[in-house]
Amino acid sequence: MPRVERCVVQLTNEQLWWRSNEASNSIGNLLLHLTGSTRYWAMEAIGGAPIGRVRQQEFDGRDPISTEELMARLREAVSDADRCMAGLTSDTLLETRNVNGRQLTVLWCVYHIIEHFAMHTGQILSMTKALVGEPLPADNAPTSGASKSNR
Image (tube, rainbow, N blue to C red; front, side):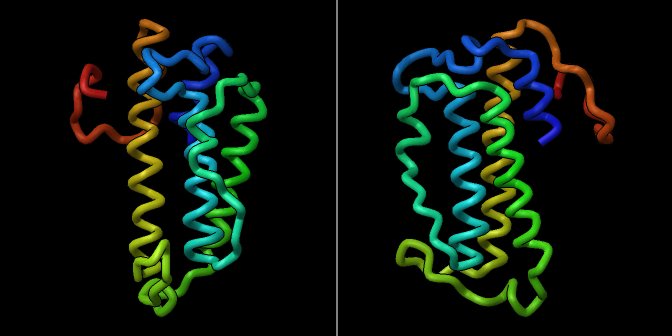
């Protein structure tokens, strides 16, 4: 979340909703998608509570939603996922869930939330650098010896 937030605060509303072509997504659409996906996998796939998600709407949206609203929705979805996962036990992680006709362990679902969020965070970072034209402020996370140009 901190990396996504650092990107979003640097962007104008126009940049947030810009897309290079119709086959690509805007950062705004990626934020909508992360919100829907995070909530779906935590609350519905793991928790069993239907959320009424319509995945395609996350990508189809062209009417700009404010940065504040997008980030509030994403923060809420991440908080909901955190609460859901905080209650998982080692036994629960090994249970299976029927997700779209596939039998998946809860642990698999948790890893999917993480890898999916990380993948789209990378896209948002890259798109922000391309739009803003300067490096993002460094965070305080260890870099494992990576040079600044590799971040």
